[in-house]
Image 1: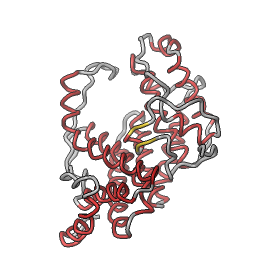
Image 2: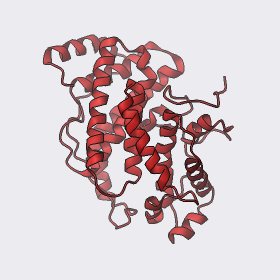
Image 3: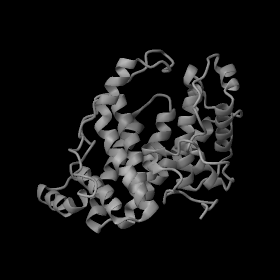
Length: 317
């Protein structure tokens, strides 16, 4: 959806008072010029200079997502209207400028956009019911445009379907659930079924196991997306249960991953925050709160059930 200049000006005028709650939204990022930063064939060794360049190039997007997620989470926690107005005014501003719908210079640029879409849709879900009708119209049309671009790029890829496919699925699933569009939910379900067929009897993902010293980290990263997709779609899956168990066991003791890969593993410092989402959806009693229960990519505060989750374990009062 491309807004006329007149319509966009009206939207910005209507949002000007809202923006004061958290500052004026920054100029939208239209094109994304990201770069890969791994230096080995396993994509497991980071080149610090290339990593720094990529972080600098994508910082405007990351900073935007952080503000939107924090204000959206704050609104869900305290129902302070100014927090909702912050998220909604920023989202409407970038939507009116067709942010991230320009030129993607590299594959990493496409990755950055799909991670951003997952964050945007999940954060928006937290404040959606507080949005005015004109805000909903422009924001949801923009999310759909980003989802369409994500699907188009994904469907054109002929290579291996690994964690990137899972995160594309989460971005599209969150968009479908937030906008009520079944087309996106069906696409995400096809992704999920494909991913579940990749899970081996021992709970590993072969393509992620090939990541040498980052094999465990990429199982954590893959499970992060797939656990949230399962909750959005309300799908219980035995292969997903195997993947989650193997991954969490590896976080506790990476010996099995080191034996399978022949490489010492980079181990997360604590239980992944997405375990909260998994526990709520599978009705497992959580064993404490993960040390890191915040990530903008998943819409902010993971201790607060996202409105798009399907809950079997009700959160404590």
